[in-house]
Image: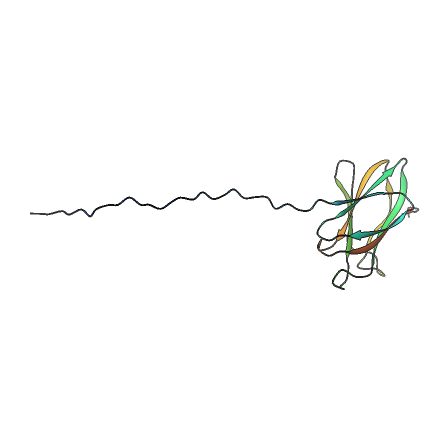
Amino acid sequence: MLATHLAACAPISTQVVPTPPPTPTALPLPFDAGSINLGDTLEITLPGRTPVILHWHLEEPSNAEISVKAVGTNEQGGLLDPVIEVLDANNRRIVYADDGDATTPTDAYIPARGWDVGDYQLRLNTFDGYWSGVVKITIQPSELD
């Protein structure tokens, strides 16, 4: 005779805790530093962790070069390595510059080029996007080679 004994089955009392939905990590908004004009030189403080935006409007086609030079060091006393990105009115990148020329390899430089009529956005930051410091930006009228 075969005897079967069933062990008592108790219901599992594990409480299910739903996983909360992920929350977006908010990046700081870019800092709007106003406008710059052809022929201007401005000193801008990069706050670190977010770019600085300058607005540039051209009423007529122009030839210009843009340079961004570090003024001093970053907040920790190290090298400040500025970069510049130029966007058109539709937020499309036109040009990006990280390094300068042979004499200023850590500064950003956009050689002379033709610029169309319209609105541009210049985004200034550091290469790593982290450190703060002061830069000097110049938009200089120039002749094309």
